[in-house]
Image (cartoon, rainbow, N blue to C red; front, side, top):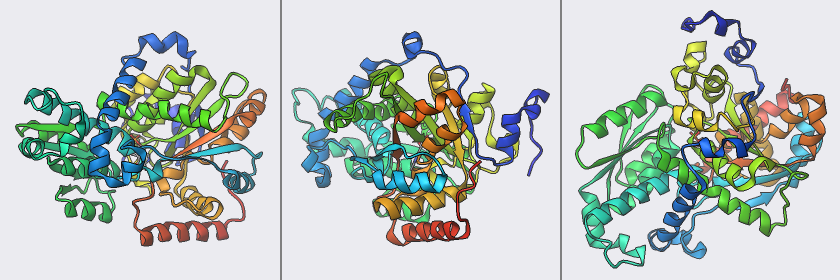
Length: 449
Ligand SMILES: *Cc1c(COP(=O)(O)O)cnc(C)c1O
């Protein structure tokens, strides 16, 4: 462990930094949160931008239905199921010693084509690049059906261009699968955390995979450098891209329709609390941004991070955003939640969410494994460790918020965003679940503090 390189003596005295650096689980409430109506017009992106992203995904729906037949039944709209999770609510509230919540799960784990939250932002950015190229090269004149993106003249154009991305795994999968299908040359820079099966799958699809022995920030930096040195190349910048962010945000418009269809009322007396696993911040940040535009302050958004990688909590609490890393406070950024293994948060996202995010909590690796087992047992859902981080959120709020707020959180509708799982090979998933069951058998109850 290196000595924390905190310039400022204040930080090393800070109780939250002290708890984080010891790997303790904690709930942090954002002291800068203000009414959304007061901050909405100061933000760099708007509801119109979200609608434009949604419209782009709709234009491409005929292409997606053709290129990925599993999306044809939904008309090429890549969306995930929302499910009421009564069995999980019972199991989790018993395990966590918390009152029974009203719990829903948003199953991005089962998003078609790439099986994770990354399909939302990643696909939107690749499609935006393809559309721009087609436009510039005059291929879109008179076109009203984007299924033509699968035609030989489009593929020939894309073969002359490349897409590069740095990833802990799932973003690489999502960008790699779609870019390769469109005909682009694709290079994915994978951090040390990336699972072997993800690299193998991408190579099978003709994607060039560059393996790094260092963490996510380095993989991204290398990707950025390669892209700058390559002509006709687009770098998908997970730390800074507004196109990715807006693709994620579209989820909010769709969730509103799903909640309406289920008859779930969201208003001042029936608040919605959404729990989002956070890595670099783009996925949860984009979705939460969309939700605030749709539901205003009747929605509360909380992020969940693994205790070894609380980069967003650290960046927001210190106000240093991407100018501080978890390594700076002595953490090693090694976690079973490979999708969240990010040591330095996005500066862009941190600043956008700062005035309205409700808070962030952290979850230990042991608890993530246990949650993987419990969600399989109760709901029959196969979720990867990153995807379960938001499941204990309702209990944190019931336990750690101010006494006068506890009834409010308990009566709310809680929605845990399950961010990945369906692509995980069966054997790998069974190993996660077995590890979780073993941990549960050795502890009779959760020792979350
Ligand atoms: C990437 C990822 C996240 C978080 O998204 P970020 O944009 O990195 O914050 C959450 N869950 C899974 C499974 C992921 O792959």
